[in-house]
Image (cartoon, rainbow, N blue to C red; front, side, top):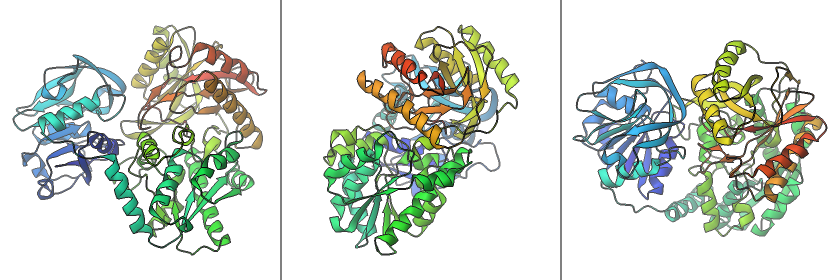
Length: 597
C-alpha cells in the first residue's frame, strides 16, 4: 500500500512525502507526467502545488487519464486547481492573492473530520477556482475564495492551502483523514527502516573507496559522519573542518571538541584569507553563496591531493531536503523555482554529483528527522540539539550593498503606511531587499520597519497583512526603542573584517542572553542591516520557530522570549560601537525565508 505524489514543482513536494511517511505510510515522488498505467499500482495519489498556472500553454504535463483511474486523489494548491480544471471547472487569476497564514471556514466533510469551523492554514497562491467542476462542491472558503472542494463519489478532494506545512495548524489531521479514513491505508512504515536502507545505500555507493566528510559541528554533518561510521570501516573515512572566517565566536575550537567523541580523525583548515579575497566587493546574495560553495569544493580537492588520497575519493556532506528544494536541485524536482542556492548545491558540487563523487545520506530528511536519527545513533545532546548555522556563516548575515534601493518605494510606502496606521504603528520601507518565497516563486522584496508601542499579537497581525497586500514586501521588522522619523541612510557595506567582527560580537551577545533566559528557538539568525536610523548599523534578530525549516514563524516575545531578555539584548547590542538600532524580524516563512539572503 503506497502513495504516489505527483510533483508539479512545489517548494513543499518533499514535505508532503515527509508528512505521509510520518503517518507511517510509504510514499514515492513521481514526475507530474507519470503514466496512468504506472499510477494504477498505487493506493492513493497526491497532486503537489507548483508555481505554474493550469491554463498556461507551458503548464506541467500530466496524463489526462489520471482522473479516470478510480483511485482516491488529493490535490494541494496547484493540484486542486488542476483537478478542478481537468474535470470541467474554471481557474483564473483574481485580484485577491493570498500569501501567508489565513483563517478559513470549513464545512462538514470526511476530509475535515475532527477539525473546527475555523482553521488556520498556509495559503500561497495567485490563481483561484472561480467555477466548480460538475459534481464537486465547496467544503471550505477563505472570504469569498474557494479554499477546498470534494467529489465524494470519485473520492477526489482538493485544498487550496498547504496541509503539509506546520503553519497549517491541523494539516496533519487532514492528511490522516485522507490517507487512513478516506483511502483506508494501514500505517506500517518506520524511520528505522529508512535508516537501515540509508546504511545499505552508503555501502553500495561507496564500496571500498575513501570518503572525505565535511564537518561543521552541526547535527547534519555529525549525523552524516555517524552514518558513515555505521556503514564503513573507520579507515575509509577522513573528516575535514574548514574555518572560512565567517564562524561564530570561538566556533572552530568548539566544533572539534564536540565531534571528538565520534573517534574521527579531523583535519582543520584555516582558510579565512582565501574566502575574504574571493568575496571582496561581492554584494549579490546568489553570487556570495555560489562562490562560497565552489571554494569549499576547491579546498576539498586540494586536501584530497595533500593527503595523497585516491582521485575517486568521495565527498560526504550533510545536505538536507530543504537545501535542495530551495536550490531547485534536479535531485528533488524538475519544475521548482529556485529560491536561493545553498552552498552545498553550487556548480562544482553539481559537477561532482554528475561524476558520482558525492554522498548525501540526509538528502531525503528534514531537520527534525535528522535530529531523531542522531538520537537513534547515540549522538550526544549538545550535537543533536545544536542550533543550525548556515554553511556560509556570517557571510550571508551581512547584507552587502553599495547604494540605496529606492525604485518604486514611494508607492509601496503609501500602501504600507495605510496598513500600519490601522494598527497604530509608524512605518518605513527600508532601501534594501531580502530573499523570500511567494506562491512557490523566489521573491527579492523590500523590508518594512515598524515602530511604536504595541504587543506581539498586534505587531504580528500587521506583519502578516503587509506582505499579503503589498507583494513587493516580503519581510517586516519591529524597531526597538526607536521612533521612525524619516531619517534613514544606507551604509555602503561589503564583507570586511571589521564588519564581520561587529556582527560576530552582536551574535555572541544575543546567544548568551538567550541561553541565560533558557529561550528555546529553532534558529536565531542575527543580521547586520546596512541601514542607519540614527548613527550606525541596525542589527536584526530573527528568533524562528519551526520543525522542518520549510515553513515557520517568529517566536512570540513576551511569552516564548521574555521581555527582560530582549531589553538586555537591546541594551548590550546597542552599546557596541558602530551599532545604533536593534530590530526584531516578525515575518513567517513564507513570505520570508529563514535567512535574509
